Image 1: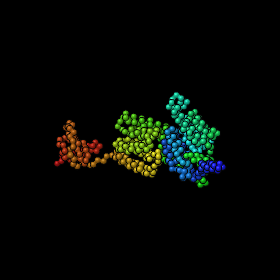
Image 2: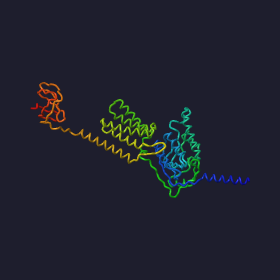
Image 3: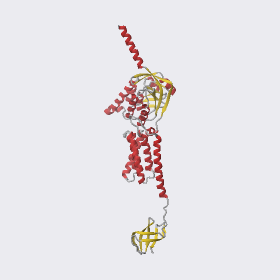
Image 4: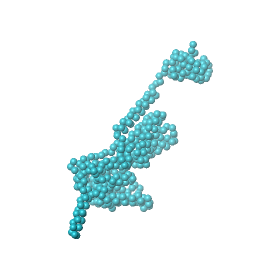
Length: 435
């Protein structure tokens, strides 16, 4: 009886062990490239790439990482995103000379497989301004402790050296690839895509509690997913330095508008810069900011019709409409987008329309006014301007035009007269009574 129980327990243990090491054949390997700061554009790019993939389709993702860091809130969103997928995520710090510092190190700790190229480094993840003086402030200590707990938990879950990851936060420690491998911070060093595929093949990882034995099939599709145009533009404006400069420019222009009101040119461009800065600072949600840019674009178009801005308001409106359309429909739980041909068609149509209107107005301003020939035509007195010596001054309407004239004859208001001479340069005519 005891022997049967023992055999049953062994069989149960073996079955559980096999269940924990399921073969996972990778048929599609997608590569995402992050080589900028960690910002809303980075989150949107990774979110778009990861949410289109699944374990059901035998997908896996490689994130090629080279970043100086970024926003903590965005970093936590990316970590949550990586932890929610049901397929393996590999972070590869590459190429030579690249680094995953600050927020990049925290993101790297969440990877199911973490590798580095030779000549790269990882670490220095202490938030800016929260250095060795953290003991002087409970708020700073809480921020440090929160990140320490987060990165420790992630590294423990992935079977890596939690103590070394902790030092990246508390002491701003940084490690080169060789030291990182020796201290079990990373899983390996690879210098090429071929080496990476060999390293991944037949490697065991744990994804959502399930241990998988990764097997890359011979005909696996390897595809690089690039940022779309909207994400590239957002990536530029979401850079903290760019967003800061836009904020300063926008605030200065708005101040100038308030100091010298009436022009609306400085104010319109200033609001445009402030909306972009608000998106970059994550003060404005991306969709609200995009909608604000589109509304602002049409306000600027309307102002152009009433204000002589020499095209400044129109150019700002076109930029606001383009950026707003590219940023629109980027939500946290889904990814919808307006097709680029549609965006460019609409923007191009508006630009052509505004261009035609501007051309007609400019031509009308530059074109010398052509006067009707009024000689021997009939007009009438519209206004009596008074007596100047022996001459009476009048305004006469003829052929829909108003002319000035002087005469020794006293005419009555609205009296009809005959035009005898016309001087276009002086805008004057000679008149006589109708016989």
